[in-house]
Every structure is written in C-alpha cells, then in structure tokens.
Length: 158
Image (cartoon, rainbow, N blue to C red; front, side, top):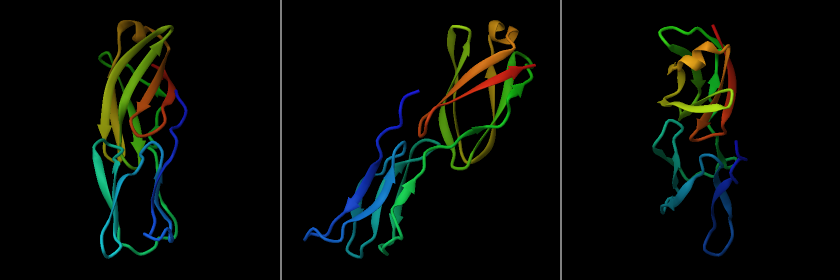
C-alpha cells in the first residue's frame, strides 16, 4: 500500500486577482478541468467510484465551503466464508459505488483473483479459489481500489 496522493483543489479568481474561491478538493478522485459561464455557474469533472467520470455543476451561488470529493469507502462485511464448489462469496458495501481488484495471498504466494465494479449498496463478490487456497484456514485479501486507499482483510475459510 502506498501513501495517499496529494489533494488537488480547483480554484477560481476574478480578473483583478480578487475573490479567490476553492470550488472542489479531492485526492483519490481529484477534480479536473474547471469551466465557468457568464452567470457564475462552475463545472468540473471527476472520476466516479464505480468507474468512468461524472460532471459536477455548481449554480454560481457561493457555497459555504469547497466541495470535498470523498475517496471510495468500500467495506467488507464478512470475516469468514464457506467454501462451496471451489468458491467463496464475500459481501462488500460502498455508499458511492466502487471498482478495483482483489488479490489473494496464501503464504508467500500472491495471486490476482478478480476485478469488480458496482454501484452504491451491498453486493456479493464470488471468488474462485485454488486447491492450495481451499486447504488453508485463512486467506489474506488485498482490495486495490481504483478511487480510494487499498484495504486488506483476513478471511477465515470454513
């Protein structure tokens, strides 16, 4: 796991250098490409947690503060899983949606298990295990999140 990227902020300033405003700030999902029209509406695009990008528009009324663009907050809901038909099923929840990949570690071996992408809510993620992984009592998983920090978890296999 690496350190968090530096936050990026989108600012606007009047032509005379006054009225400096910070419109949006984010790190794992940084805001990009500020556009302003004559009425003062401001728009930028940012990465969506579930993949792709989205355009955000402020109506031009001065907000109370900059819009914070949160990083993905995926959460693994189970700490144990039953092996059925060489697979385990995990439950993941994210309030914004999420995309990334799962990497399994048993002993000194590391193996890519699968990628995932889902919208907000709770979702099931099925992982196929090797015979060596199935024989173990625990499986260390690393969730490499596209729009947030990596997470690790140890799953007890039953």
